[in-house]
Length: 293
Length: 305
Image (cartoon, rainbow over all chains, first blue to last red; front, top):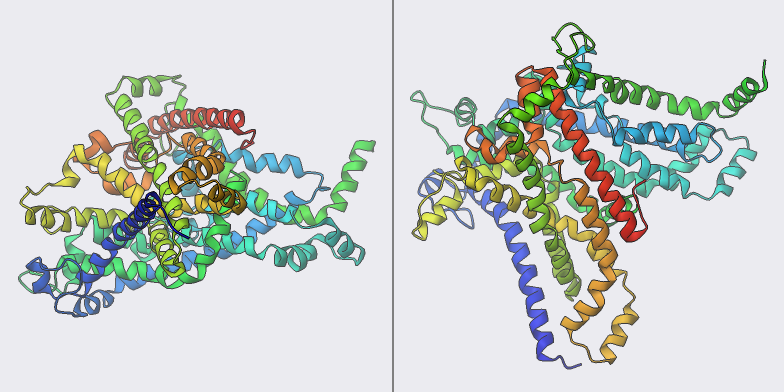
């Protein structure tokens, strides 16, 4: 089929815009990775733009030795694994009763949780409550206050509601109670939805910075994001010196710029590694959210 | 025993497992979500720490008036609005444009590559995004200033200039979200009936006409819904990114209601004053969400509740 010249212009624009989008997104990452693998002298002379100059892994050796990085990394993994597990269990426990059409408290409890989406006590009263409960500076303060996200309960409830009634009816004739029905029947059927919710919750916990800023003063408990803030944003000279293996004169053995960029790569790497596995859920995830608004 | 109690007991017995299931959730909502709610009355009291939420004298609207009379009021209102509105204004059309381009790409590997790369920034934490920005824009060793100098321009201390804050905030927001936001438009375009395109081809329309008369009208409902939904969030700019990017030098353009509440309440321990500002923010947000919902209902017969 012959294409007209206007169509050629159209496709030219399509590829130009797409390439531009890729370039704009990719270049910052490319630059960070290049600096992280370049030699200190090349960085100091500002020769690095697109690829590593005088390839070296000394920056990584230095950063990975730093104990605080591993402590915060472990903490983040803990908060993500424990938090997400609790989230998924609690979301199912909340959504299933709300999806059962005969449940006599269904409407009242639906309103009870939906109300919190539009009205809350705000930051200060919650802060005072959690402090009073003794959660300040404990691991649980990162997971208990976000046991479920109401919006995700709604999504899960819709998924349960989509299961044909006949399945539950025949199970109840066989003598199954509601708990068996939830775990043996309903959960396996809505697995794709739960996979998406797992993704949402896990990303939330991995990136959660605000709760830690408010409630975790103890460095031993702080997650990766707080550590990254000190390295990247406050560029704490004390950390830079310890991480950079400071000499007696206080001069840095490696470039502090490199320490920062290596830290970025190290923190993004786990996300990039699981990225191919979660990517197939994106479209489903987005449409799930869109249906409920 | 009257019949109502009897019915209730029968229902509780029948649904006992459902009640059992929901009970931990009920306790969670009661303690974490509902217990702090009466705390908003602190906004109308003279609260002293250590004496309990309900201590202190009633002061009426004192804190609200104090806030309204301060230089912060209009500044915070303006900044909160602009830092949500500018990303919406400039960022809203870009995912649509990108989605239109992506679906036209015939080479499957390249198409997949484009999507994989542009979705990625969505999953990067705010701390890392802010960290990259601050380091790229650093006046001494930031790549942006190195390049500026290379082409013969002056170095700029971007993070200390109030005039740059909104530009940095908005453009990085678009950078992070345009790819992921395009997913829903790609799905919408893919679900258009291919026969419509076939009949268009027979009529001899070119690609631009096809875009204007076929593709865009078909995804118009999606565009309208998403636009109205984002209007509801226009006074709820995220705390984290502002907090990580701003500093005392850029308060003038960067400080928003939520960061001010944090500084006044958590750092400064002015609990009553901070709660009053929080209440003020909630009321505005609620009105906007409500208005957006009414608009959505009128425009599309769909609504959030």
